Amino acid sequence: MFWNRKSKLLAKVIAEKCDNCRCCTRICKHHALICAEMQGKIITFVNRPENCTGCGKCVNICPNRAIELMERYC
Image 1 (cartoon, one colour):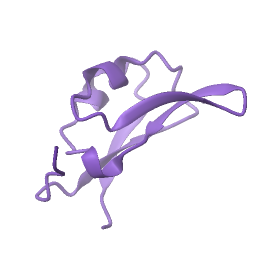
Image 2: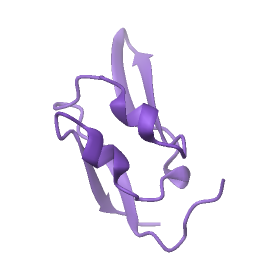
Image 3: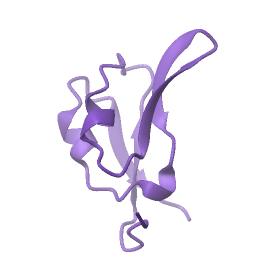
């Protein structure tokens, strides 16, 4: 899969709002998001920003509004 170079948006997970329900990781067909254990705590984050197309599906499905689209700087 190649990054959609026309998209200027990138998903960002707001850790304080996220309860790690994994809805976003299941809906992202580009495998940009991941839920992993770090330092004894489970967190969700954008693991592969190059795969994120900025489609917004993860934003729409998040029950806690813990994901937002931000402008991509690269």
